[in-house]
Amino acid sequence: DEARALAEDVARLAARTGRERDVARAAHFGGLAAHAALRFEEAEAFFCAAANGFRASGDRVSLASAIGNLASATLGHSGQTRLPEVRSLYEEHLRLARELGDDRAAATALNNLGLISTLTGRPEDARTHLEESLVLFRTLGDALGATISLHTLGDGAIELGDFPRARACLLEAMNTGHRIGQRVGVSSSLRSLSRLVDREGDPELAAEILGSVLAARDSGELHLQEGEKLRIEQWRGQLESRLGRDTLNDALARGAARSLDQAVAWVSGVLDPPRHA
Figure 1: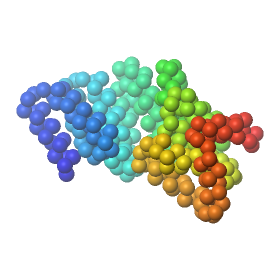
Figure 2: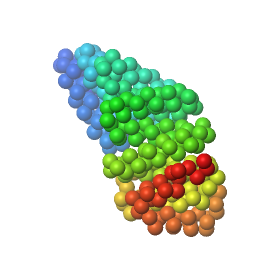
Figure 3: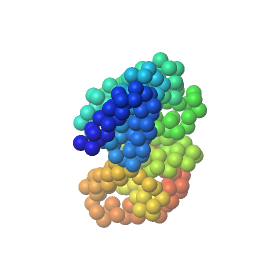
Figure 4: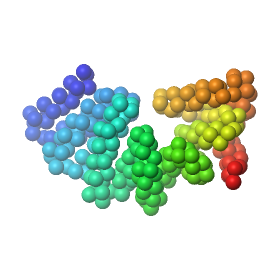
């Protein structure tokens, strides 16, 4: 109700002043602040008001940004209950980015469409979007963007059972993230590599990899969003059901003896070249 009231206040202000673009900019900044604070419902309302104002004023550059942010806030607010709506927003973001010749925004929209396709069980669509996103990010020299696309490609390949491709993508994502100092991304790649190793039939090694992530989290070295914390705990629980508590704790302790930097080097040595060539 508060978020809806905020959006209505913005709309009334724009109507009263006749300065849709200025009011839309203020709403957009409000959305960015709310999104950073993980207040996704409030952010969604602000970004919706901003998008409406930019559309009315004809500011297509700002509209593209607002639409992309609106999609992200909607996904954060609704989880997976409104994925068709989120997909439609990312498709509009991609269309606007292409019309404007903004390759970076197009690459981001393609990556996000790949994520939504993965969540909705459309792995081939996801691969198409993500491979195009990866090409654009690499052309732009955007290592962070490429890392994100590689990670999402790797997760999708696990679900498809394409383990060699998953390993290649996730190892590259992990090592690139490590090189550019994206420690949260490194942690996420290690978690996914743990899932991959388990799918390949070695849950004890999977737990050892996860142990390094848990140690880095518990030491305060990583500042993870709530969604990632939940995914880590869910994965820990699944490994415990496979291994039993004592075996799991022993494997986690071995992993915890390594720092995140040491874990990157160790995992690269264990999984590259592939163990199951």
